[in-house]
Image 1 (cartoon, rainbow, N blue to C red):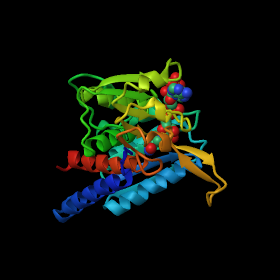
Image 2: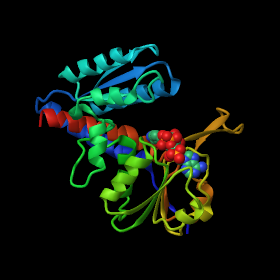
Image 3: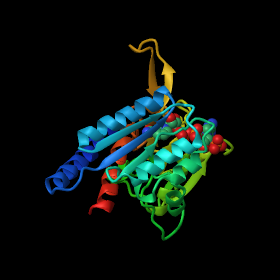
Image 4: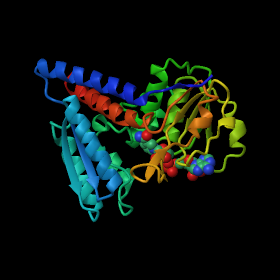
Length: 292
Ligand code: NDP
């Protein structure tokens, strides 16, 4: 039987509407508007596009956004001093430093400069450290990993006791997803570029998360019948038949996998839209921390 297609676009829309309703209720109660500051360094086109879609989503949800764009030549001190001024700005509830930063900048120092209560991207070393510790709770969880768990929850997937396999161990996706799954009492296997027998490991997964950035690496025969497959990968491939001459595909061979899996996210329209939805929700949460 063909898999249920997990409609991340619809679920993300639902979350964005929930945020907009709550933001409007807070405005009606006379509370200050939630505000998100974005910090972009340099002119990476993908980063510029991400920041602009985050700002547009804020406007739609009734969240104020404050865009800051520094040149690619900005010094460590300039970036940190901008972050510190945003920490002190009462209108700003969340600070998002768009990654990756230009290579001359020390990313960890910049992220560490963000106030914990404004770390809506969840990458502050203390928030990540708390995520990894039993009995400690981060104030914020990184948005894409949180989006993965939200999709699983809203699809009613039982995580406790399941075998979860995470392909990828990056700071941004793989590792935080794995930590979140452990916190939900899944038994988690983390794979990376040196792992042996990926197909065999994947075949034992009740829940399979692919976050490697390798076009359609996960084949249909890697998937346990009925498994839930979440494809985080975003890979651009050439496609002359497409109006733009290219299109996006995931880390999973979708057409093969959907014949075996119980449920699966498409690319695009799966995990992608969840990231911004969770960023909006984190920003509202930050505003509530300041003004309950
Ligand atoms: P990284 O390149 O930082 O990490 C990739 C991970 O995959 C690494 O842990 C790497 O292993 C592992 N890996 C690479 N090749 C293989 C292989 N052949 N076999 C097994 N493991 C492998 O990528 P990100 O985590 O940042 O992103 C992963 C994907 O998710 C990308 O396609 C990215 O575009 C997408 N993405 C989507 C987002 C969204 O939907 N909003 C947000 C962020 C990312 P090792 O550690 O050994 O190098």
